[in-house]
Image (cartoon, rainbow, N blue to C red; front, side, top):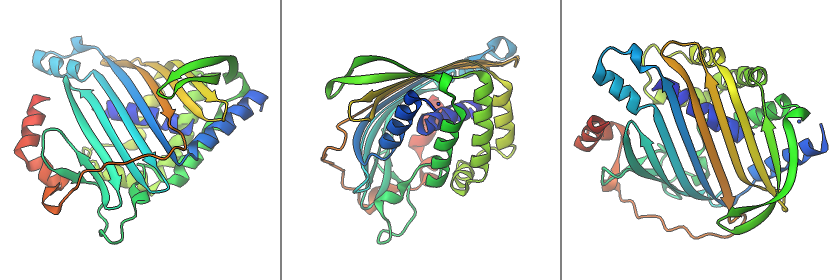
Length: 315
């Protein structure tokens, strides 16, 4: 489970973070301009397959459960208006042989998560209602660290890794869009350099470290050992394709990552990510559900609920 989480986390950071030729400059400008967007809708999908050697597991039931956890996928459809601080997203998740949906939204009253197997809402923010500002929902890393990671990404990638291909039409929910395509391919050596600098930023980020503590990780959890474990793997494939529209926004990204290890049990992973942005800078309507106090549940109450126990057993 910890290996899956760290792989997902690093892939997310690679996308959020991310050559002195003309192509590099155009790519850099597009990334910075897209990061500054205030209103947009997004369709994100990630498929992750972990390669476990189940022959090393003697107990068949344990091997079956591990095999079920070898595949993870998440699809998120969301819209965001940073001028209001509003977010409305729905996620479709498959993990551990079980599929389920979840809704996450941020209003002027707070940030909430709705799960299909409970009739209440989990509230993320712990601020007083009168003091809460919707833009405070944040990410699992600080804005300062995110900006630093973006800089590290751009400083790490060299000219040879950025290519401008043909002008190409891509299908989006807004229709066919004319774009310039950039392809980024990096080696294992470059990836290790990037990972090392990212690890230093994260270890110094109070927001990130506090979030780790709140995840109730095992007592033997060691962040540095996890980074060392990934560092011991070999990057077999890293290909990212970026599509920039005529207005200079990244409207589509795809990423393929494959890594292999010498570990007897965990042999590596294969991941594919797709992301689309549309309705850029357009006004949007938000229809949030009304959440009353009696509908709010804490994480502790969720973990002790019959619904959660039944769901955990199913997994």
